[in-house]
Image (cartoon, rainbow over all chains, first blue to last red; front, side, top):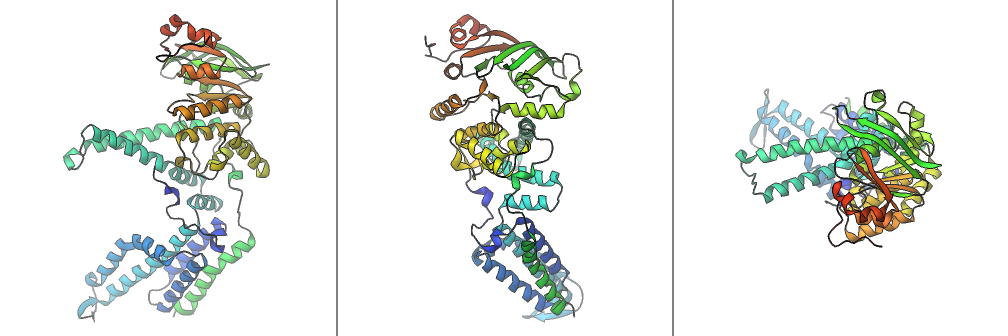
Length: 255
Length: 254
């Protein structure tokens, strides 16, 4: 069993940011992202200020810069798109380092790059300071439908059980000389997926029976997640982030 | 008062398969009873009747569904929701696969699930959780994720999840399956230390002999034998007739 899977994104620290109630952090991150996306792409100064804000939170939360840098590699496919845009967009051309690129494409690429990066960074900071379990709790308290939060929570719990089952099935297949390296040998893999789905489905039924046996009636009891509920002070504190970002947007973003 | 009274219980699945064909069973308070029987005998169906999961409220008047189950003198009514909640508090079902039982991200939350459904909160809830985990010797894994525990640990935690509801009747489905010998023995010690009425479904006959005083054999939806466990295990003809077998080299202690 892969140890520590549930904490893949969490950076264990005891900082002011870590101790904030999860719902406040989610709301702040969301508001911040909206402000970033709403900023016109020409507002260079505003983007710079947002980056400083993020750096400040990272320092406050004691999240290592290298960790952030490594994790933000997830953004690479978008970066590739952003880099291609200047070459394929139509319109007036400018010369950069001896290359003829479209001005419109340059701005378009920059737009994707800067907003994507800032969005990824704030999401990473949220994940680094909030265990996955607490994010579910936060979403639940933000009145996201329980059907969605419960599904997400089950995923959190059973992903590894399923992966384990898939691994065992694969080993059992290999032991009987299945060698799914080529496309025409993919049949075993495909039927394996079907079996896995059926098993997951049946497990779902059994889990439901076990839950009902302990009094489940459709809602998870709120008492399970009673600790660290946001108070007004916490809400005021996190409101600082979108408020300051909004100030930057008005000051430097909208000319 | 009897801990469990089942009289003339019949149940047919919607496909017509008659899983239970007139089961009568009485268990006194404090008894530890083994429920034995071959695969497909109806053991699981019977167990699901003990806390009102079966019959579903919609099937209560269907053909082939009749008989009564009472726990601690309280009859199970499939349509009485409040009554069912009380029955589910009284009857703690521990399922065979702990991964079916433990569905929340941490052990502590999972143990809290049952009592929280009963309306406990705050300190009361925390106390119930700590007490249940202590009873199975698992207090130090409270904040861990279930999938980081060994099977033996997970099964003990699964027992704690129902102990936290302070059940009067503990029902265990194959408690010893897939455990290594030491985990198996440790679980036996824990189960023997619990002051509750216990019904244990198992194929592990020596384990049943160690833990229970009485055995009930279920086959083809009927109780075919009921008596002191050592007498039943010594009756080779009876065992053979119902596809039960003592493991090689095991002799019934006299």
